[in-house]
Every structure is written in structure tokens, then in C-alpha cells.
Amino acid sequence: MKIKTVLAMLVLAFGLLAGSAAVLAGGMKADAAMAADAIAKAEAARKQAASVNGEWRDTGKFIKQAQDAAKAGEYDKAVKLAKKAEAEGRLGYEQQVSQSELKIPSYLKY
Image (cartoon, rainbow, N blue to C red):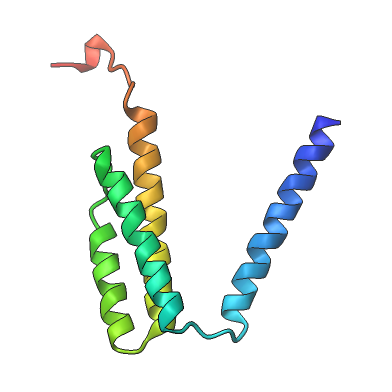
């Protein structure tokens, strides 16, 4: 019974993900509000990663490029860059938290 539930959840999640990607790719143009929202989410994710010393090298650069694209009226590009920065922020946070208790074997220490 649990396997069926998990499979159903995976199918639902995949469907939602594919549907949201299709909406963005299928003609729904980003506007200034969408770009600003995406940039704000990316900045929040960057700050969360930085709070545990897990910020990745290019996250801030992607946010800056997204801000520049939004100022130039290239909202689709801004949203794309901001989503990339947000993903890096979340992944950097998760990576740092998951490895915070990492024990290095004595034979690897010098």
C-alpha cells in the first residue's frame, strides 16, 4: 500500500512540475512583478545559505544578472536567472547542513 502511495505522489509531483514548466515555456510571459518576486526568493535562499556558510560561488552573480535583466525589461531572462540562483541557494544550504556533522577519518587528516 505504501509503494502505491509513494508512486502516486511522485506522479503528481512530476505532473505539477511539468505543468508549471509548460506554462512558463508555453507563452506566459514574465512581467516585472514575477521577476521581482523571483529575485526576492533567490535573495532569501542566498541569505539562508550564507547563514550556515554554505553560499555557492556564483549565486550572488546570478542574482545580480537577474536584477540587471529586469532593469532592461528582459523579465523572462530575469526569472530564469533568479530561479537558478534560488536553486543554488537551497542546494548550498542543504549541502552545508547535511555535511556539518561530517566526520573526517584520522587517516585523511594531516
